[in-house]
Amino acid sequence: MKIKENYILRSIAGEHIVVPVGKEAVTFNGIMTLNQSGKLLFEALQNDIKESDLVKVLLDEYEVTEDVARQDVEAFLAKLKEKDLLI
Image 1 (cartoon, helix red, strand yellow):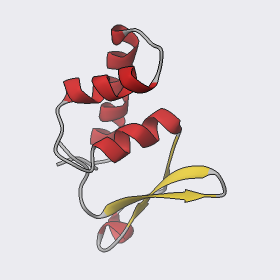
Image 2 (cartoon, one colour):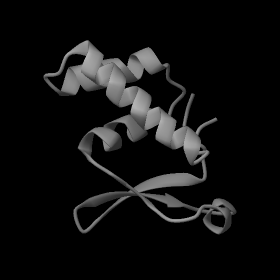
Image 3 (spheres, one colour):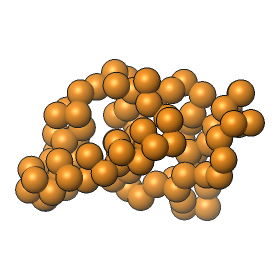
Image 4 (cartoon, helix red, strand yellow):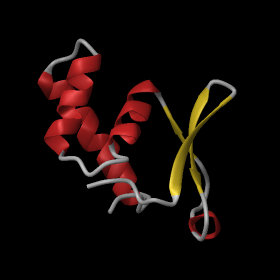
């Protein structure tokens, strides 16, 4: 899975914000602000990646258990799917 190409990540005033571009700017309602772990996952999703690899991204960066990392990844992916940002 990966992020659709018409969504980019920008840092504005210390906030990490997902910005729709092109036709997505017309159809996407609202904005999406990410915390640091969300930013890491969003960046990893710029390339085709498996869910298990996203868990590893969090495990490599943070001192959390695999269960906590997996739950965070599942919640993040659910939000992206809800907003239709994944292909």
